[in-house]
Image (cartoon, rainbow, N blue to C red):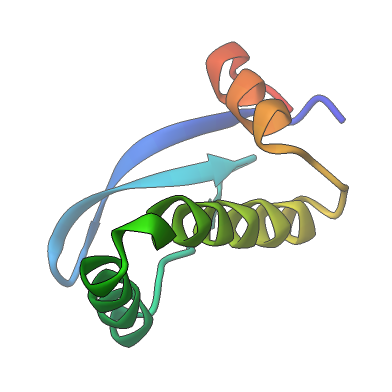
Length: 87
């Protein structure tokens, strides 16, 4: 694929946020605040669910970033690309 990828500190309405940028296009991904609140509540009630909830969030991120890149990626692929600076 050989596209430049980096994490940039980008200003938004709430201040500065680290964002993933691929070929100068910002990957604007985040967890819905309501969903995050529900996940935290679930983990507080059932600490044994922490790993399952975390994996669900990670998998959602990977799926969304894969779609953004228009190629199937794994979390390992993404982490290596960020470290190298290209995908």
